[in-house]
Length: 77
Image (cartoon, rainbow, N blue to C red; front, top):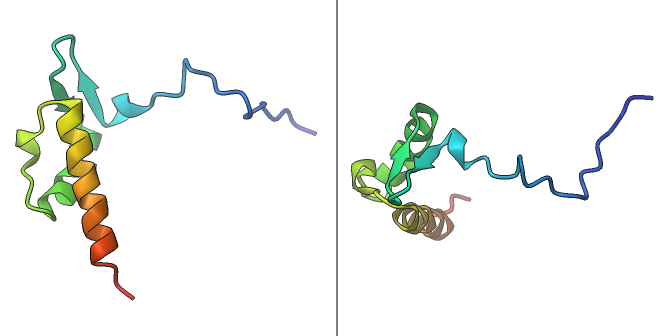
C-alpha cells in the first residue's frame, strides 16, 4: 500500500497558492501572473471590471465578490 500524507494538518509552507495567480509586492501592489490574467480577466470583464484597475488584494477580493454575486443572481437553470 502506498503512502498517503496526513491532510488533516495544514502545512502552511504550501497552503498559499495565490502566487500562481498574482503577486503582491512590499508596497501592496498586486500584479497578475500570466495564468492569473488568463483566469481573472474574462471573469472580471463579465461584470464590467477592467483587470488593469485591480491594484491591491482588496480590489481583487472585491472584484471576485462581484463575480460571485453576479453568478448567484444570474444562475442558469
